[in-house]
Amino acid sequence: MRQYPVGSPASVLAGNTVALVGLFSAKDKQFAATLDAVAASVEAHGGRVVSRHVPRRVCDVDVVNLLA
Image (cartoon, rainbow, N blue to C red; front, side, top):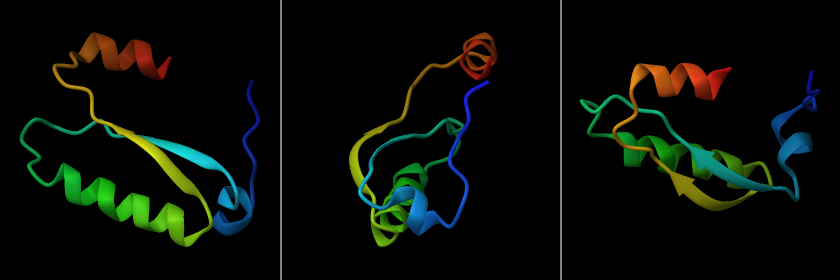
């Protein structure tokens, strides 16, 4: 099992690059604002957002395989 760092967001994110990946409902028209808020939080804690991805046309099977 992969171990992820624990601690305050600032200690975990400081100096690291982050790729944001959002899985949103097609009905959610505010996904860009949500990603903007997450990116702002990452940057406020010392991280650097290098890319943002919002997959489209994801079916339930793909989500299950992605989370496995």
